[in-house]
Image 1 (cartoon, rainbow, N blue to C red):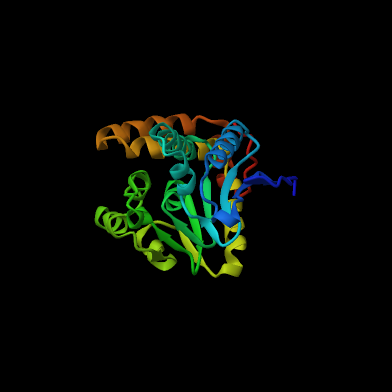
Image 2 (image 1 turned 90 degrees about the vertical axis):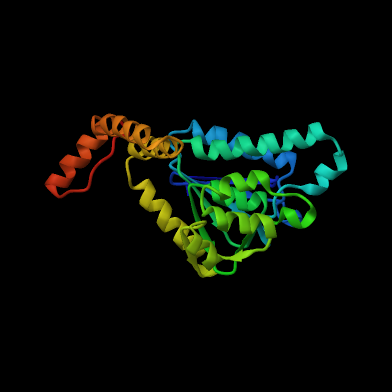
Length: 264
């Protein structure tokens, strides 16, 4: 372990060999996203995005939930549309940051992920769930349609599957989430950390230059028409193939040796 931030606030950070784990730490509130937790998460993500030593980010939750969604009690206590607007705006900024930061993000889902918690899973680049985890956009049960979680959800699963979750608020299990494309892998609870580490190491083993550029292009082309998407991808390929790491990777492949990345 390179370093561990032994903080006891609403967000915990652990650094280990290029992998940062950010753990939501409001277990008594099922890790509901309070304004202060949103602020802490944004600060850490901004710091990580600017840190070339960090290669992968894992999002986790402490206690009996991954994340129950927004802190509705806090929103209700303020009863102020300006406060509610700020909460949802800050959450949306976090979701955009997860997509735009150069490091791949992985959701570690050990338990239920509801509403904005499901949104965090859907917005992460990858997700690994423990068998027994559940996923729901449950706001409609409480009179709140999960509009913002629906943005991320609809970009992971089909329209009809997304709308079923949004309209009913009912939970799906981890295997169903896997079949629908909401998560990448489902494992036994005791194997969750091992599987996360395996996935992280496979990413860390690759050149950060190609990973960062590839992630950026992937999301850019998704929002483009087919012709523009190919133009974006072509430009990215040209830039990639001219990097030092690409030259090293090709030479290493030809020489049947392990590449030594230079990060350029």
